[in-house]
Amino acid sequence: MKAEPTPLPLAPGVVRFYSFLTRAGSLREDVLAGLALPQKSIPPKYFYDEEGCRLFEAICELPEYYLTRTETAILRAHIADIAQFVGPDAELIEFGAGVQAKTRILIQALQTRLYVPIDIAMDTLQASSNELAGRFPWLNVVGIRADYTRPLALPAFAGVPVRRKVVFFPGSTVGNFTPDEALQFLKQARRTVGRGGALLIGVDLRKDKATLDAAYSDAQGVTARFNLNLLERINRELGADFQPARFRHKAFYDPSAGRVEMHLESRLAQFVHVAGQRFDFAPGETIHTEISCKYSVAEFQDLGKRAGFSPEKAWTDPEQLFSVHGMVAA
Ligand code: AVJ
Image (cartoon, rainbow, N blue to C red; front, top):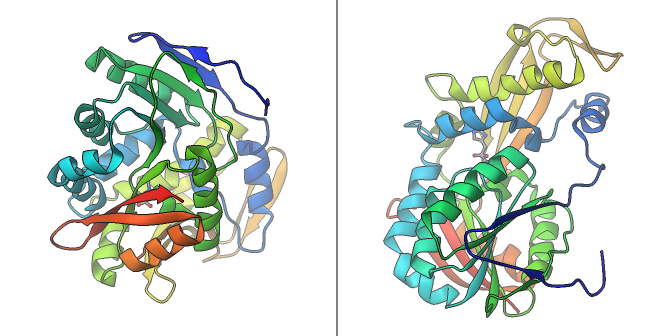
């Protein structure tokens, strides 16, 4: 982290990309470490290779997966209020750059002049940035390739007035953290936006088990393919010999913990090799691949407060499926 970064000059229509990726947290190290744990486990951020991104987009279209369309509907329904909450001349920093429909709604309504998407995947970042820059000719886009789950010092930009920084973190991706991790993450986001900055964050609400179980084990098996693609990715990128057909997708909501857990369950006794190391599986043993935590509005507001935000707004849909919080950094 440099103390006094030189502001980077901007020009509309010129899309810039910077890579802030450090070597730490590579697929290879994380997979080898995760498979050596008593409860084998692989971080969910590794779902999103090209095929994983494609499958996730297919999940977002599923009838059972209400999250994406509900969040989009909330943004549309409350966009005037959201624009008023954010105010003019906001630097819009998005964590993740995958699906842009929601971003478009915001950029259009806020008349955003500076958009800074942060994503771990350069191809996703470039595709999405170029598309948005083409669509909004007044927009300055600076794509940052980085892992937003780690502390991040963003460059300063020259030539565009900025009254406040706003982090946009849609999709309930914050649910991939445990509540403790989410608290640390929010504190970090609080530092990223600075005092008076804002956070617009989508959070899936607690609800009945049947709805959540169905959302994470869809009838068409797309979520199962998304989960199993992780093994195929590891085969492709680390030369491993997983046989995906020997694992089954398992996802369930745990109401007391308020979270969905996703696993890959071994159908039989087997062993696999990853980067020359052998890992054994008992029948029924699982690799834990994801948690997806759900919060009531009050629970998430409380988390925000503990991270140094003052929760000002919480927009929800009529069925109370999903929430979008507007918080200001105290
Ligand atoms: C992108 C992390 C929000 O947890 O709902 C979808 C990923 N996993 N189906 C979620 C996911 C299984 C999704 N997030």
